[in-house]
Length: 540
Image 1 (spheres, rainbow, N blue to C red):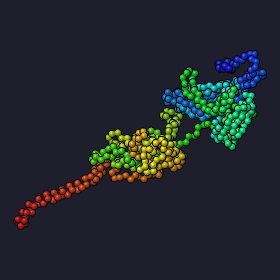
Image 2: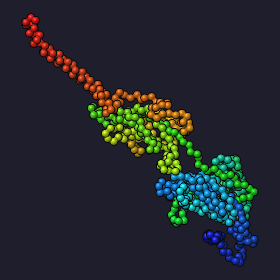
Image 3: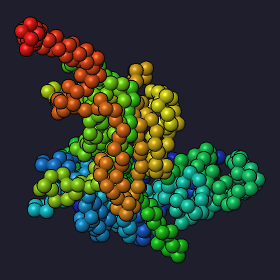
Image 4: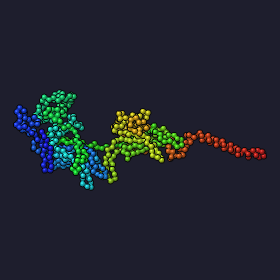
């Protein structure tokens, strides 16, 4: 059998098959058509009728991928969908998605078609323009008639499992037993017989182990046979499974150049006495904004990279930076003159991902999809040169590595991908120690430790329980208990001198003062002795 491909233009449309038979038929051989029926009643009696057939066509559009940008200023697209089936047109211009090259639609469109008249579905993706004509991004065509009459049953994909309820409920209007019975009748086969562990169709047996006494056992057995229908001899063929198509988008003005792809699937049901089931809701989950609250308590064993100019001791002026979006980076105050790598902060930071406009002149807000990764960096503050990088920590809030409850057990292997992870959005709150490093490679030495308290809560709940940044109210944090040596040498010179004198030269200064005092006493005595001696001589 040779297939005649579609030759279509605005005036003519035709499609079909060509079959060549030897006539008269050789003696001794049965003359049958493609489904095994006798040719005495006609060779083409199994082909579809030319009478009009009404259909309900449901188009599920999930998302588009890697679209070519059409806006030269933003490098994005404001995309919306337009569908055409025969004379029926759906224009979804009002619900365009702004500033996205990978827009997620999650929409279902339902159209009525009449075969063979409405044989082709046209799906177009357009770019919305407020001040000029909209631009066509790309389009794709789907042959509805070919799918509906295909022997592979492309009207509604077969699900992997049969469920009456739930998110994966059976969506075809015909159950697996009905579909299998129709296939047997169409191919002139005996009706299926259901046994405890197998299904028999004529002399062919399909094993169905492992079903036991489950509910809807026959439906599950029939579905198992449908998935293996290609194993049936002669008339068997692969039936279309449930799947999402990824179709290319092309623009007629730019032939041969891929403009992106669209993920979608199509269900078709005849309009008759048996109604179709309701459409599946594939709309994206509503966006929920969260507020992340981070309290930076302490650091330990941070590298000492500076030297005190008076004493030569190694020290670091430690501060911590944190962000989810780089433009929203926040930092703590500085723990000056840390001599042991220990830093005390008691500092709160708040981060939130929201929609924002790409620029002041942008018409719509842009929703950026960024991973929920909290970046923490520890730096050494310098007055007259660039700050020195000391260590970093990246925490995926959805796969948060379990920290250590004590700094003693905090080691770099806590960040190993094979270690236990938790979801902070389910845990909601945690406090632990995590190691700092300068590289994510295994075996790199630890660059210190940091104690953090992380909590996430919905924005509405955060508005009801407000907190201040840093140590400010509401719910102000207590000031850290830093040692007396924690001060800026540049900003507090008198305190620095007093610290150096009291700590390192105290006994020397006391000794010098005593010596000076003794010298002054001796000098005063030498100065007063001649006068006192003369007075004694003259008897004054």
